[in-house]
Amino acid sequence: MLVFYREPRQYFMIISPFIMVLSLIILLATIVSAFSSGNKELDKQIIRVATAYFFPVFLLYGFCVSSGIYMIVSLFDKENKMRKYMFLSGVGPFAYYGGLFCADLLLFLITEFCFIIFTLVFKLQAYSSQMGGFILILSSFGMALIAFTYLFQHWFKNSESAFRFIGYIYLAFGLLLPFAFILFFGIVTRTVWGLYLGNAIIYFINPFYVLMEGVQNLMIIYIEKKYFPNQPIEYVHITKNLVATVATSTLTMIGQAFFYMGLVILKDHKDCNAFKKTGGNDGRMQPQLQVYTDVIEHEKEVKNPANNGNYYIKAVDLKKTYASTGLQAVCGNTFGIKKGEIFGLLGPNGAGKSTTFSMLTLDEAKTAGECMVIQKRVEDVDVLAEGSYIGLCPQYNTLWDQLTVDESLNLVARMKGLNNADRDRNKQLILETLELTDFVDTAAKNLSGGNKRKLCCA
Image 1 (cartoon, rainbow, N blue to C red):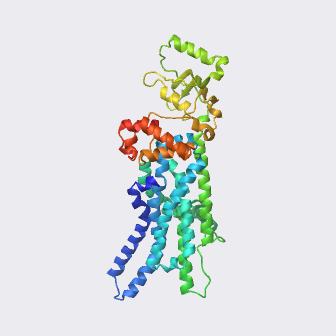
Image 2: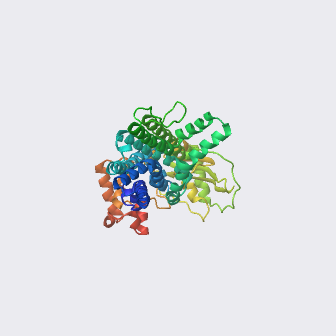
Image 3: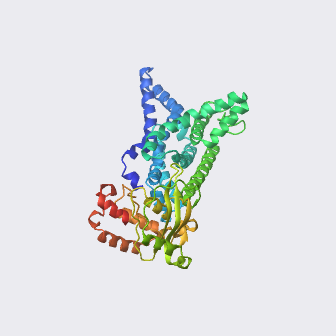
């Protein structure tokens, strides 16, 4: 929520659906004024009816445009490897996406509240007279939209490009694809049931389509009850026997939300545990440096079975080959680190230092060899239970730009499970030791390069 609060462009995005519907009223008012009959009450009634009729389309368009705000945080965390750091700190897939979902749903409810006020102020009786159903449809759509967006974000590698283009993609997915898909099924099967089948498939996978059908159904119910009270209501049909009622639309979108969130959590679990996948073909060896006697002796000591319990971190014949290059990035590294030791790797650019540490910090999967941290094989490490014992300061800055130094330290302390007393004591020690006390209320993005590295270490 702090990231949203400090990102002004997202203010516009959160109310953009509301703006789209307002633009509809302005457009309709302009058209009606141009062809006015001179009867102001009649003109107002025409504008209200036309607004209610086109409302679902503009509502859908607005939500397509604003949907990018629901993937910015998670994509930023992913592309800057913040998600990996949070996983190491004990924040599992359910906790991570569950927390994001609650925060994003709160943002969606702000937009929903605007629409509720809008229907009341502009007297859109097709929806205001059925406010309970309208709220249920919008709320369940918000749940489905957020979950679907979390899943869809995996198509993007960059949060900025996602924020920029997701609206156009969703417009095609929400408005054009449903009708094209249904028409395709009808043409291929040349039967009515083919149209129903295509309609049902789109209905159960596409939350935008469910929203539009559900809101249209509210309008149809209102019109037929008001103007044709003695005739049976002709609902919007999904199949011959399935009708897009409020209950059907709401339950469908809630089901979509659970289904997509399940896929998202499974995907995140797979990505976070990718380091446990071992294997692959050894690539071509690159030119080797001269190996000094002390290094050879150290390798013999590490490989000696009698010393197995002496090392907290150990690598034996550790190898890594990237399939894209076919070359060994790490060519059989062997070393061990005992309790209390400070250990470093020296070597020229491309020697495999960063890749070695990536495997040790559970960021990369090894191709072959043995790799141990906290006296366990990496494959056996329970990250959620034991990841907090692993401290990590990568060569790039892993910082939330919008958070202050104080907020960043509080967030990390909470992820590590520290109580308030331990948090405050450790925070005070860090601020004084790293000379960050004067910058405690400074946003990370405004720190100098050196202070960013200090905060990263903390």
